[in-house]
Image (cartoon, rainbow, N blue to C red; front, side):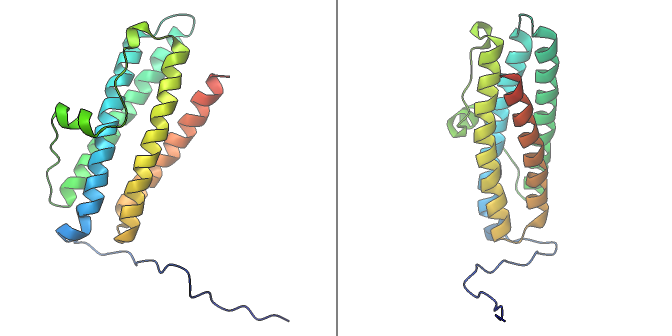
Length: 170
């Protein structure tokens, strides 16, 4: 019979922290949160544009779905900004800052078909998911289970919406 031994080569996880982080402990988390917020803000405006400009046989369905999406995004932005405040920092970005940081780019929705809009939405989801992973990894490195949980919840919802919109495109 073979005896199992503990693998000591695995990365050692940091334990979760009690209340109170230093500026240095949260700096990386805040940088990634700001990047996520910037991408979310451009994504939000793109969704508003899609909501206003969708037409065709899918109008009623997509008009409502885009509204649901931008309302959820607006709530997520607020949650992230308030998380930054918990760390003692005031989130502040101009539109110029947001556009320079965001990987998500604006779209001219009045010339787009419904399928083009949903395709853009799915591309945005990829970027948002990557940005969320950056925040989760920074939170894990610093034992910040609250930020990790917030982003894990966001990711769960985003993955479900990605599946639904991907199914719609088929």
